Amino acid sequence: MIVATLFFGFGAALYAMGWFLIPDVRSGQILAEDLIEGQWDWNCLGCFLFMAVAVLIPGAGWVCIALAALVLWLIAQSGVRQQEGYGFGYHGGQSTAPPNNPNGPNNPNNLAPNPSMQPSATMPPYVSQPVSQSVPYVSQPVPQAGQRPYNPTSGSAAMPVDGIPAGKYAMPNPVAAAAPRSSTRRKPAGPVVVLSVLGLSFISFAAVMAVIWEYDMDVSGIVRVGTIWISAVCVVMGLIVIVLGFKGRRAGGLIPLGLMAGACAMCMIIASGTYAIRHYDATHTNISYTDITLSSAGGHASVDAYGMNQVQVNDQFYADSSQRTFDKLVRGVWFSGDDYDSSQAVLDLSDWESSHAPHKLELSNGNTSISNCPAGTITISAVQAQVHIILPDGCSYGIGSAWRGYTYSNSMGGKYAVIYDTVDLIGFSDTDQGYSIDSYDTNYAWMTDDSKMPANGPELLVDIPFSAGARVNMIYISDWEGSTYMQFRNNFDTTNGYTEDSGKAE
Image (cartoon, rainbow, N blue to C red):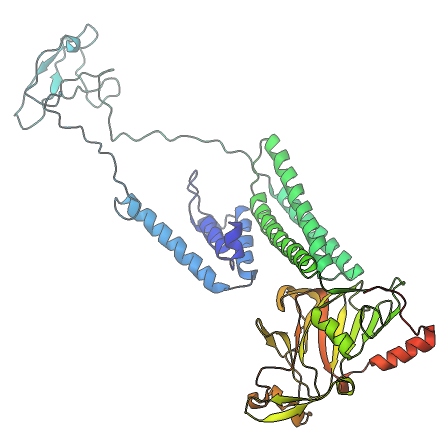
C-alpha cells in the first residue's frame, strides 16, 4: 500500500474508493449509501484523507485516480461473474443434488427390507405405496386408531424419503438456509482518541516548522529534523494502538492516520538514506579533492595556500585565474561552509587573458575565431556555501560535463536542494535558466544562435558531483557587484598584514 501510494497516488485512490464503495463483509454496510442517507460514519474520514493524499501527491494526479476507479470497477465485475458461475477466477461449485448411485437407496429396484429401518414403538407404522419406476419410491405413514394424522409440514416429525426414516438417518436438506452467525465486534478507538491524535500531530508539525524557521535550516537540517519528527509520531501512534488493544478496542479511525504516517516516514527514510549514501559516496570516492573549510568561527585565514593563488578570511575565500589555481579546480575542490548566506567562495576567472595566451576556437558554422576565455572542465562540490564563478564577458560556459550533458543555467543548487552529478536529487533548486541578453552585444550570440556556439560545446564546463544546501553561480564580470580577487587581496593584506602563506597545508 505504501509503495503504491508513492507512485503518484494510485494506491491511495484505489484504497479510498474501495473502502467507500465496497460493502463490509461482516455487516454489508456501504459507507457511500449511509452518507447519502444522512448517516455519518467516522470511517468516511479515512476515505476522504486517503483521497486527499492521492490528489496532493505529485505525479499523474487525476489520471491515476481515474485509473484506480477503472481497476475497482473491473474487480467488481470479476466478482459478479464468479457469483454467476463464470468468468476469471471461477473454479466450479459442488453440486447439491444427491448422486445417482445404482446401489443406493434412491434406486427403486433396491427395496430389500432392512431390520434397522423397521418401525419401532415410538414411530407410527406406515404402509409403503409404490409408484411408477420413473419416480423415486416414497413411503407414507398410516396413522393408527386414535392417533393424530401425520402432518408432513409439522416441525415434530420429518417425512421419510427414499426409504430412509426420519431421525438420525434422515438426509440433510441441502437447500436449508444456514443460520446467520452473530459476530461481536470490539469497540473502535472512538472520535475523541482519533481527533486527539490528529490534533497533536498537527501541533507537533507546527512546532517542527517553527524550529526550522527559527534556526534557518538548510536541506540537510530539514531532512534530519523531519525524519526524527515522523519517527516519533509513528512510535507514539504505535503505543496508543497497543494500549487500545490491551483495553479490548480496535484501532478504528487510527488506521488511516497510521498509514499516512507510515507513508510519510517511508518518504523521509528514502530522503535521508539517499542523502547519506550520496554524501558518503562523494566524500569517500573523490578523495583527491582539495578540501577548503569556510567557517565564521575564525582560525581559517590564509594566503596562497591549498596550492592556489588565493586569500581567505574565515568564511570568505577568493582565488584568481592563474594556471596554478585552475589546475587545482580541474582536479576538484570541496567547499565546506557553516552558513549558506554568509559562507562564500569567489573564483575570479575574469582576468584570464592576463595569464593565458589566446587560443583558436572553431565554431559550429565552420568559422574560426580567437578566444581569451577559460577553457576546460573544473569540478566544484559544496556544502552550506555559495560559490561564485566570475567569467570574462561573453565567454561560453555550461554547468555539467561533456559525457553527462550540461545546461546553460546561471546557477545550480540552492539552500533547500541536494545536487548529485549536476542533477536535482532532493528539494528545490534555485536554478535560473540563462541570462536575459537583450542588452548584450554580439559576443553573447552563442546563447541564442547555435551556429555561433563552439563546435565542441561550451569552452568552460563546471561539473558539480555533489552539493547540499549550496549553490554554484555563474556570472559575468560586468554583472558582478562584489569585490574582485585583487581588490579583496589588497584589502586583506592592508588590514591584516598577511603577505605570505599562513601555513595551511595543501
